[in-house]
Amino acid sequence: MAKQLDPRIRQVLARGTVIPAHPLALTADRRLDERHQRALTRYYVAAEPLIRIGGICGRTAQAVAEAELLTNFGYSAGLLSLAAMKDAEDSALLAHCRKIAEVIPLIGFYLQPVVGGRVLSYRFWREFAEIENVVAIKIAPFNRYQTQDVIRAVAESGRDIALYTGNDDHIALDLISPYVFQVHGRAQEYRMVGGLLGHWAVWTRRAVDLLEECHAVVSGTGSVPKNLLQRSAEITDANAALFDVPHHFAGCIAGLHEVLRRQGLLEGIWCLNPQETLSPGQQEEIDRVYAAYPHLNDDAFVLEGRDHWLKP
Image (cartoon, rainbow, N blue to C red; front, side, top):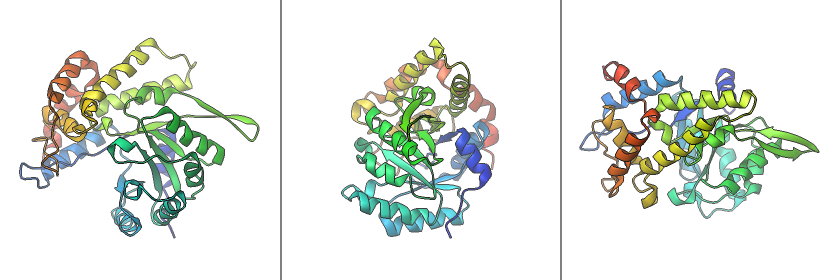
């Protein structure tokens, strides 16, 4: 029998929470840096209580093995990448997803093609939403049309599936936008309740503040403050620097590592691939957004807790 999501975790997931991507801390010789890896985890826990979600990739045999490993280690759910099946038909993709959902609660992942994802049809998402053990979907195509495909598919399924933005270029607006669809003759409103974001691997305490503010807007009068709209644009500008948009995201991981290095949470920006580093001009862009938007960083929060997090 498939592992089911703990009701307490389901409640948190449905309410909406901050789920940061967790970088890999490496030494200069590209071995696991346990001290800084542990410090990163403590940082995220201090910013927001964690739901433990593990990535799952590869074709079916590999993906099932990874799902079983996550289950054995007590992870709550698996985030399923379909990047290894770029040429598969929808029927094969759905069969693959069903196999994984037999092992662990499943979070769908719409990843933009420019960083290894693929275009997925509305029909795929409509059938995906019918898989019993699907508990959430990370919507990250960086595309308004494709984003709406996923939300409409979930709406028309009638399932209680939590919607999370992964659109790092549209974070705040995703979190406050209502999506209304006619379902069985009735208008039904759906929203993205939280974020599962690479961008939130840094400045995570500020991400928690942002989500709380967006939730307050949604539950209030519906009037969106001008300063929140302004901050939305600022976050997008900052993300362009961190994710290295001018070079088609080539330095996106290194950009996040650079922020964590500046904060003292990483020793360096090393990635598993030695060729993966900051792009020309990216460091200067990070300098620019740091200076332009000091209210977006959580350097003071990190400084207060860092020495404790770095302890054995």
